[in-house]
Image 1: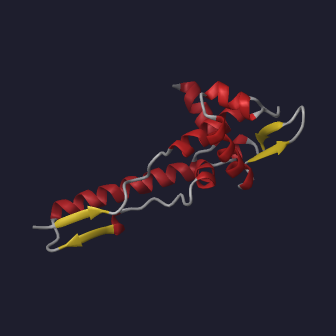
Image 2 (image 1 turned 180 degrees about the vertical axis):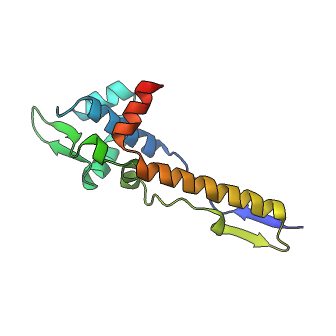
Image 3 (image 1 turned 120 degrees about the vertical axis):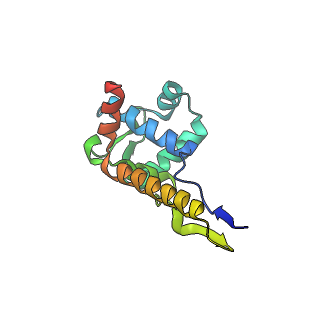
Length: 147
């Protein structure tokens, strides 16, 4: 009997990735206006603590800028059509790399079915990575307007 174990699932959308994407789209919608953490959290039903960490990561990656003070807050530091989604994901994850079929552990005889499924996961992972590197925040916002 062949034991096949995938060491990691295909690309997973974590809560941090979802928060980061919602945040950059929200900031894009607000234009060049500085927006407070509380405004972003309230409008998107996000906890302030989780959002604060994501905003720190996005700022560290150079995707948002902040200004302290009474009229301070956050805004995008680049035009939305220059911020690719893989950069947003990478800002809040350790890696954007999607783990594919090359990370399968195969014991015993190799099953044709196992390799077919592994090949499918690898192909899907590559399609996701390709989409993330080619789509921008502006594309994401435009897609939501069209749908």
